[in-house]
Image (cartoon, rainbow, N blue to C red; front, top):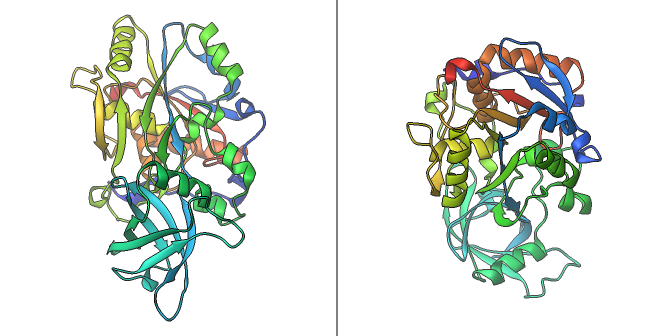
Length: 360
């Protein structure tokens, strides 16, 4: 499909720079194909679901993936900014760096900030390889838990560029940019639909007879980038690591067999569930990378309802929601959201999308 079909104009005033407080006070647009749009709030979610429904959340935890340092070992020592995007092994990460032209294979970057001292000493990384789009492979001087601790000490919260371009990350973001479910470290971007949840909302869902399940997909930085290819068939999707336990898969399959619906909290949960789904719609245990790219025409097998935030123009995520509800339905929903002041992107408001029957 043509990528420009998924473009739209978004006023900058609609981009949220901070979340609302409390988190479940955010607005939520309910979208049912063929029905009127409903303006609700997130705390209404239990009333919109049924006893026996199964809610699936992503329990990945965002690491402090934004590192700043300088190239060392040559006559000049330019500043280098790196965003870790994919763990390769115990000591190696793939990263996006700026300015990439200042680095060559074999260069050493020393990460740290003036006035901040890593308890383990400075953190050095050697450039093992360079790509064509500013990505490099960094081999760090620490390994395993020691490296994780050093990154946590020296790194900063990797806010999306549409927020970071407006203001610098601060201490509040360290809390705001984690969901209440965050447990397994490895993401470099938050599964943002989960940011709306509070203990009070969790209790209300339980009282309604809705069961919450946890899966893990370590979100990569490429999730929120616009598609640059003119045609979706030419876009190469990034790969992310995810896991669904056998116990979770069995519980979801048993509940669905008894009429319960599966509600994915976030496109990350949806992509993982669909990656693990068999042809008959049952979910298999999963522990692998997925690079699933969902566009209109995709046949959904596992997910019945999707809770998600409002996404960027021309992004793979707007393509996904257009596949879920229909392109015209989502174009109309986004027009309504923009006109009525919904807040977009990671710290913004939510939508609750019911799957288009034709994609069943």
